[in-house]
Figure (cartoon, rainbow, N blue to C red):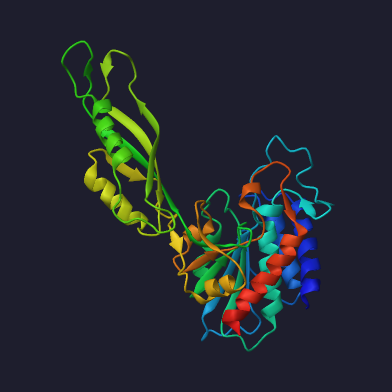
Length: 354
């Protein structure tokens, strides 16, 4: 199919997706739609829960595989909407609707690029397109549960709104639950061991410590104490003080390395809620990055977290739309952005596939 036909199909698919509510964990309807769309075009579709994926027609297990991934779940529409969030409407160059920008436009554009190459038997790589669920709530039944089904992957292109610029790294995220332990006693007497004072020492460490390795893209690892709780009544020295730390990890460390350094320096008990949202990156010299630069794209480090954090392979975040519009009222994407996105995906992939 030519690029104009792919563009028209992509826009109609996106409009159909907008009409079907697909909040995180409630994406069955859009999963059905995506599976039907691909099946009608002769593609063998795989599905697990609300995740849909497919391999190119001439898949060869001897070849490496490129993953093309985006998500079809959305956040809840916020109260500031002046339009029906589930009614796609076009005004000029704008297509309005919940999930149009984040990340429906990237998803349909990646599908278009996949279909462009699907019937080619001479590609240097296999292609796997996976449009997955539960990205917005970092759920376990999204991309994470699909990865074991996909086989070995060489690298990934993750479709999130980046204005089709090249996000070559993404911060990781850890949320730490910390507990300083003391001993209860009466506040009027010299009794007890105040857990708040113990916590204060560790909180000051979190505030002032600087990790020695600094990222060229992000700078230093950032740690912020965001919640604190202690005590039950005014005359009792508290035995426990609990606080929460938000840690944004750069591409110079793994989450586990950062956690180990923290535990070496503080006296409190430190428990991560998860270490699965990892920092990710791809070399600026990688062929897919060089292809984007040759087409006038620029590189940057993304401060936001996406499903890219679940991948342990080189990955490039690159997508249609603007991150600043994500989760906003009256969300929209420019139709010209979809056209440009499909064209750029096809041209960048050509540099490594052909």
